[in-house]
Image (cartoon, rainbow, N blue to C red):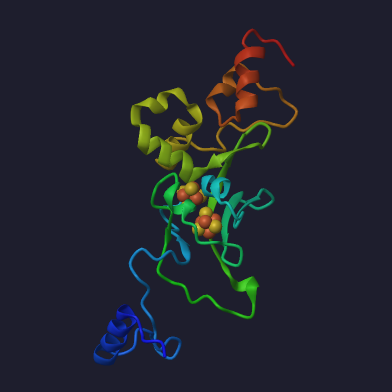
Length: 208
Ligand code: SF4
Ligand code: SF4
């Protein structure tokens, strides 16, 4: 006959006195241990929809969806919990450090996986000449608040901040599609390519 090891004996006696180690979940709610990595939950205010978390997600569980046919144009960042491996990379490497948090929520079982998602939607800022996406409005405003006076080097950020403060209008200097990018267009929302054209090619009136 084999005798129980001392460690097992100690645990058996402890369980007799303190009760079983197991919980009664799902009959009773169970609170996860501190540090448990559960459902990543985005913060609708503090997430700026930059999409950086989607780049580092090893399971490709975060979708970046640009809605360029809507008015205004928007970007959705969607966390798909049926693909997520709960590694925590999106929280650790979030641009704002507050855009998404891994909560203690773990009971996500369902028979309909199409319901296993959540996300945020933010307005997009696009080039006024070619329509190329520059970033989200919240992303540009976040950079503006972060770097302060250094914003002077980026007119797109200045313009977005001024527009937010009601000092300018995005529609104030739009032009027809047929017109070329001109030097004066430097002071509009332009993607890097169009700004390059305005700066280099049209500086002396040369057309492309
Ligand atoms: S926890 Fe990991 S797998 Fe899940 S969404 Fe974040 S980065 Fe992707
Ligand atoms: S702010 Fe953070 S959570 Fe939101 S899209 Fe950027 S990296 Fe992801």
